[in-house]
Image (cartoon, rainbow, N blue to C red):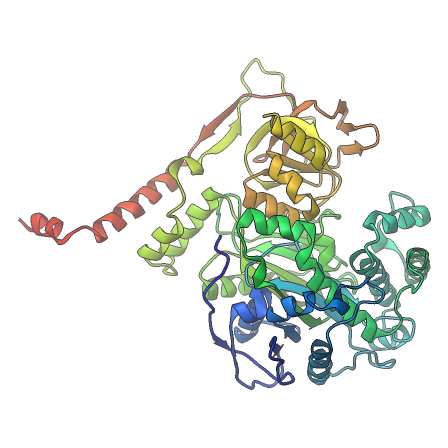
Length: 574
């Protein structure tokens, strides 16, 4: 992956305050004053938000603090203080305040207003996509004073308290550094281990939120900030500071990304997937990222926000239930995915929210994929007229024929091997290795030349260093489209998520897998094609799909013929 990309210049809505010499601020949505914007200036996420808006897709309005602000902020002593005392540089704060006023005008609500409060999400976005490596905060602007006004506006007290609960927990984790499991323990103490927060009524959510607020007060004397402006400033700071998080640094190292490019910060009006039974959040690919089949590959959760899907802490469903319950939304989503793919001329990884049966697109980027999928997708896009022969050949220049091989489990007639558990396959292939339960063990055994499979409760991007040392990942929770699964796919690791039969006892270094009791170091096999897990090793064969191989050879033959010297054509004429 290259560290930089040549800026692609487009016309974007630009109504922000006069930019500082250090950075640029851009508004997406609203009146269409023209300005030139590049992906290097505003980051890949914001750049593609504008492109989707230009395609006529429904995109919530947003303002963007450009990538150049990142280094400026990270060099400011005030921004590097402890979270409770950190502040943005004065020029960044002034630009944020001025552009926020313009976003309020577009949204028709005011940030911090007790009667009609504007709520915001705060997201990262470098010029090079780094899925899940930096932080996001949702529902910024909710507090004790603004919550009643939000309830009056939406008419849904359950939504309001659920959003407030999520903000408090995320603020504690992202801004103050409190372990996410601390909030989960509070939840389990109040609800038990089997209860899903989505089943709670507003009174239970209110009680849970107050417990979260108490937890924050125990960790930080200043507590959760009740001033929305303070929330926003610290959220923006946290996202900029996450550029230097351990997992972001590791990802840049693995992918040879220049740390100087920085991240932009996108401040966007909220839409709510947790607004009830006709709402939800999802992540999808316009084509199958494992084998390249030209069908959408979508995970969706009803009555949920986007972080539920991408965080890897919740298990999501495929698109079947969405298509059955909200067929018009499913039709709109398929059309949007096709429109984005045609415009961007590549398979897209997209995030979306459904609020009360209304579809909103939140992100699109070129999707990570296996070599087999890369070959089929490029060949199909060529056949569909979206790529020339030369463009297709360039995309597949690094794909070797042996890279197309698919490993398959072979159970001989006399074999008694049976899967002990099943999970959702997020990345295909078959691997065998020792169980490792954390990064230290994975690195230790990898250094000794032993193949290891990482077993975790959640599919989280913080495990990127451990994942690099492993041949596969198996989790008890998480979605196929979670950020960690996306990274596993990019790294070429077999990945199975959402294994209900997996229980991990980390203190005793033991696991239960189906009915089997195992210890760290025991050998298992992951079948990422069928979603099966086997004890020990099984026989595996590798096969290259003949149709894709022949199409690739034909393409390369055509490319060779097209670039052959003129003498070749002269001989053919005789």
